[in-house]
Length: 115
Length: 115
Image (tube, rainbow over all chains, first blue to last red; front, side):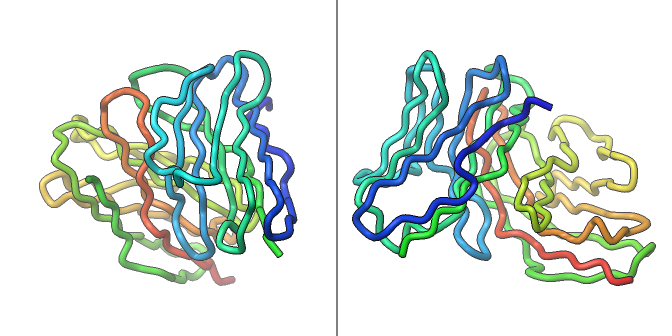
């Protein structure tokens, strides 16, 4: 089952370090979404990318956060100079095409803990 | 902006019984998609059922069915013959029918199935 892959599953960083989260979409999917889930909360949208393009980053903080989805390789969510408030589960989802039912397939998530 | 409200933070049900989880949403869109996702302790997001707003017939997937009331903007999930493996967080989500767009999630309902 070649679903959405995310790594690492767990990531521990100290305040001020960088966190790099990776997402490999379902093979053939060209649309990737990143969501953040705080404890006891639902998922909140951060950024939507297609290959080599950021389509919508309205949910991503303007500072310290960046995302990319290169032509080759996984999508990367980068958090610079992490703070304790960045501790959360980060989910990636992919979908196959524009239009239609917009069914998104989710990865298992990366749990980031900032000490 | 679209919003999704799940008014039941926690629910419990006896094994083999039926339970209904509530979800309401707010949108000015005329066509859209609604989803229920399950998040078990593994934290993987699993699509349970999907409803297209222009379809009047309620969606059904085995023991899972929805009661979609478009005028009331209500989208409840009914789980019949509850099983211990149904224990999870359940999230209601909304997507406009305008191509690939981010999902808007409710805060979730924690369901416990009791033996």
